[in-house]
Image (cartoon, rainbow, N blue to C red; front, side, top):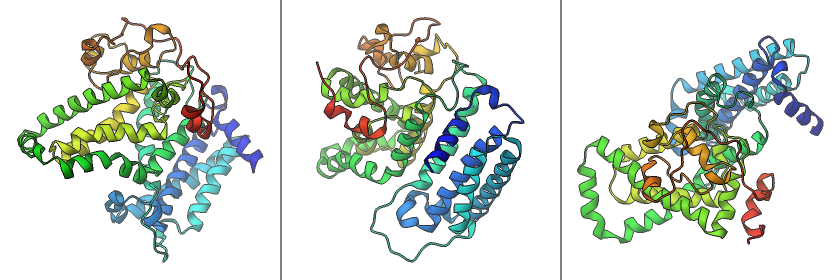
Length: 379
């Protein structure tokens, strides 16, 4: 088993010369992607109380959803067989075939929910699948066609760690949400003096509410972000995020579990306590998911003027720069004028960082990085 996983990793990380059209690499890659998505959906249908998000029940109950799952699994089978026929190395195609067969054995698109009652805890496997497909299919092609660093591959160094971070943050969405919403729940229950403000905010036009939500959350996140750079103990958590040595759409998911909870808790405070419409909050959350992937993405474009108005990839890449000139700069999430006001703006015309990461040695592996804030030496 270990040997097969090693061959699979080597095949996924094959050099560009072994990935061209006609080699079976793309067929195998998309077969494996579709097989994993199909298995996630089948598992969520089979154990909805444990592996499905309640918020996605409308998607699972949609009349065309099972037809979609069937089409995904059939496509995975077809592409896996094509990869096995074309590619001398069979690891990707075989892995896709195994995952597809597993999904079929569990019941495929006709799977029915099991009889065992749940315990009120769920893991968002369907949320992970939807997120991965939506953001991956959006940014992976963009990074291939307009890359800032053309030599950087999709399966670059540390991609497995970042994909695992993506998996954990998606599957633990229930726990993260419960812990993150605790502060706003307390404020709503005990701060009745905000009722006038809530009524005023609720009466504003939708687009004004959305712009105000972006501004307020960015102001809060600016100081939250800056404190994680300036307070040594907090930096131990944030150093995990900055330890990525390559920047792409997946790198933004590398974030310590504790920081995710604290960040979402801080972000939710103005959204949930000041009377914003639910549709405004939903639109903002959806925008942030896409925007966070964009600013970390490996896409070119200097945007010298626009970078002074909105956060762009080059603006945020300087925040991750290994060069001393970029350290403790560009904390804003949406609006760079906050960095201008507070003296942390840095965007040299037409220049990108030469490298990314942190001077200190952050260990590799999820569990080692999870413990890093408590084991690192400060001084």
